[in-house]
Structure formats: structure tokens, C-alpha cells
Length: 475
Image 1 (tube, rainbow, N blue to C red):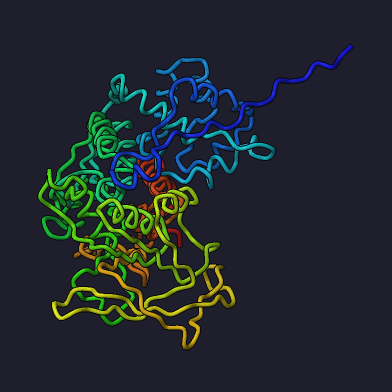
Image 2 (cartoon, rainbow, N blue to C red):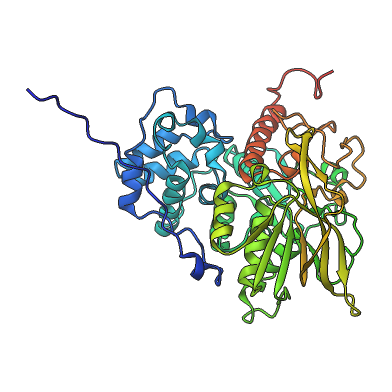
């Protein structure tokens, strides 16, 4: 009698994408998403573990096996409800979160096979809901408390949404003329479409959250004024929008951008829609992007789409140390971005009109590990060379903008400009003020900021309802 074999497990479903030589000339979304058949096949790969390690890898504690099971059984509204029970922004997370180092890294199936594509299934369910009409949950009983949330990025939207679900009156104060924070100004259309962000913001507003635009805290109001004028608590989720530079000769030339300015011009000011919007960005034929994080990948791929014939990523370490997601590096390489590893700028050259004309670089070698755990780059004497370029984009990281801290006595900051806060609760050293996201950690991921917003909302609720025992700040 022949032995009955178990059916072979289906392979992980590939995500359809635009072809590289097509997508590098448009700003349409690169990843096209699963169809229903692909989503169900992928959902069927889930082992439905009783001890779901994937959930422990998710900063916002999404009920992963439960929403995947509902999808598999075609209970789509149940899948939506289970997903959004913990995550107010699933369509965003499904596109830009590094699942490969979080929930998917913890997936048991990944020990022998490829892990379940949790992020892609999250995107599918969220997009399905958007197509069929987003529904807000029932209104909660009013708590009687009011909270001001400063910033409408991922941390602020998450904190505001969670508090609104608990019955709080929440007002988001956003400095820019459009809500979404880094989601709207920093991440390109081809990676995160603006209509997706707008839909997620509208969902948070449907929970009862008020959003005030052009409201610059530090100018129109201070934190202390907010606390004195009716708000019982303040959450700081303003991110890290102050760019960093190398302080080398020539950085003040025309044609040198911070990645923040460049991406804001392209995204928020809609340079990607020129000539429909008369806000062009001049990049010239050759662009150099300094840095190799996700922001550098975004800037380089935008420059390519804006017409640059040659775009270089200039990075002082090797490929092994690149901090960007592997998927983003792969996309950039496919689209024709050139990587110059172990290379560091030392000077930017300009012409008589004070425009960038080139960049002097030096070759590097890797020495012993530094404080970050990566091998320290060391210049090789005599290896300098010139690189022709018309535009230089500095993607070196960011710090919190100091404007928001005006007159906020008692709010302690580190030497890097970030706010000192307790990771588990978001409490700052100033009573009734919480903080989370990049303003605390420095530039990090969307999902880590969302996790911080969720933890802060939980602690704000406990504190205002007198459920939090012990002193405000640990002795």
C-alpha cells in the first residue's frame, strides 16, 4: 500500500509590479497588489499557530492569524474589523512597513519555507475595505477629557485614533497645509499613493478626531498654553524634520538639497505632477544622493523619474551595511540607480552662477566597528576623485525641529535634539506631556512610530482616569 503524501505547500505569492523600464518614468505605484485569488492562496499558507509569534513581532499588536483566517474564509468584513482593531492605518503599513524584520521574521513557516506575506495580505484587506466603503466603529462614550496631539504623522494619527476610540475629545494640530506628516510629504507617490494616505486620515477623522491645519505649535501656541487652555494632556508626534548636513565646502550652492526639502517639493508641492502643477524641481542630467537609507532610495528614484539621465547613491560604507530595506535597494537597482559604495564626498564644486557643477569624493575602507556596531569607514589617502553632477541631495538623517519646544519648561531633550521619554509609556519629564515616534527615537520606521503612539494613548487613558499608580517619572 503506497504511503499518502501531504500536498506540497504553495510557494509565497509574488507581488505583481510595474516593469522597471516603465515605472522609472512615471510616479504610479510600483507594487500593484494581490488579486483575490493570490490573497487567498497566500492566506492558506498561514499555519494558524496557537502561540502566534508573528503578533509579538508587530509593534501595534495586530491580530495577524485571526484576520488572515477571516480572509481565507472570505469573511472580508470580519478581516477588516480584526485588522483595524489594533491598526488605524493598515493600508499604509501594508505598503511601507519593514515586515521582513518584524512580524514576518517571527513567522514559524519561515523556518523551513518563506514566511507568510503578512504585509501584502494586510494591504489587500485594507484596499478591499477602501473599495467597498470604509466604516467607522461605533462611537465610544465620552470620557470628559480633551487631548491635543501635535503632528499628524503615523505616531500622531495612531495616538489620536486610539484615544478617540476610548471616548476622548482629540484635536490634531498640524503645521503643514495637508495632514499625514512624513506619509504625505516624505514618501513618494510610487511607494505610497496620496489617496491611500488621505483615506486613512479620513478614517481617523471619522472617529471624531478634529484636525487643524497650518497650526504651528511654537508659533501660534506653546505647549504650556495648550495645557492651560482646556487640554488635559498633550502628545508630541512631530517627527524629525530638521535635516542634517556634512558641513563640507560647497553645501550652500544652488542645487544642493536636503532629502527632506527635495521630497517635500516633489510630494507635498506635487512636482511629480508637473506641468499639471507649476512646481517643477530642476535636477539636471546627473544627480548624486549622499546616504543609503530608505530616504536616499526614495530621493534617488524620484530624481530618476524627474528626468535625470544618471543618478548615483554615494555611500561611505559597503553594500552589507546599507540601512535601507532590501526591497527598496532592489527596486532602485532595477530602475537604473548606480551605487557608489565606500565613497564619501569631501567638497561640492560650483560654477560662476553658484550652481553645483561636480563633487570631490574620496575612497573609503572599513576599519573596526563603531558605536553602531558597523565597521567604521576610514578615508584612503590619495584616493580623491571628481564626480560630475548637477544636483546633490543629502540624505544623512534628521533631527526634531526645535520650534515646537518653545517655552516648554521641564521638557528634557538629548544632545541630538530628541525628547527624553519613557519607551513603555511615552511619558516625558514634563507632566501631562507624552511623546513618541521620531521626536523621541530619531528617524525610524512608520510602524515603530505607530507603536509609540499606541503605547502613549494607553498610558494617557490610564493616567487621566487615575488608573496609573506611582509617580509621574520614576525616581
